[in-house]
Image (cartoon, rainbow, N blue to C red; front, side, top):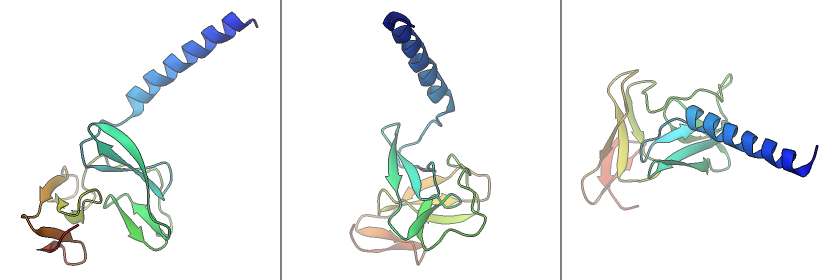
Length: 135
């Protein structure tokens, strides 16, 4: 195969890959987290673009709560579970990108609602409420 044909094949392959990625990539909402390629990674959305993130050593990404959790992943964890901002259960979840913000899930299947604490407060994940503090 000559270099011209090889170059043409490469360009067609790249164009095809870009189309596949554009179709398969979830539309992201600013501040949202999405499961990554492994149970230890995640993506975070900044200005409509997904960025790579990795949980700290000794923790894993919990796809149900869209956050890193300390300890070993539960037995039978599914790396491929993607929630795309849909609540997997009701409750409050800290926003890992902003300590002043958190997500509220009214019920399973609802869209996650991103909320903020009042000025001078941060979200305390252990108490599930806003407390006095700073990031």
